[in-house]
Length: 102
Image 1 (cartoon, rainbow, N blue to C red):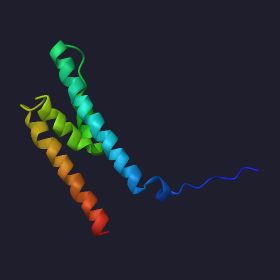
Image 2: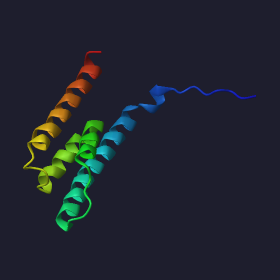
Image 3: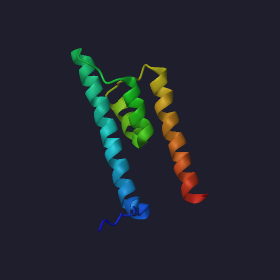
Image 4: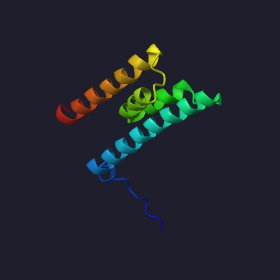
């Protein structure tokens, strides 16, 4: 007989898994900034700006900001210079709040 399985979120969202997620998303954010810069230099199809912001909003802010300044990519666009750090700071504040005050 079929037994439905229950999802135990405490087993999924362990500290180790969260750290791994943030490492992976930030490495990906750094890589995607490098890739977009490379495509820009070669005049090829570019990664949509919306995608770069989504990666930042998913927790990849440190990686995208590091990539932005390492590769000098999008540093002249105010949306990115202000937007990436703003999103990242909001996420850090939210994490601190939920960790210590909830």
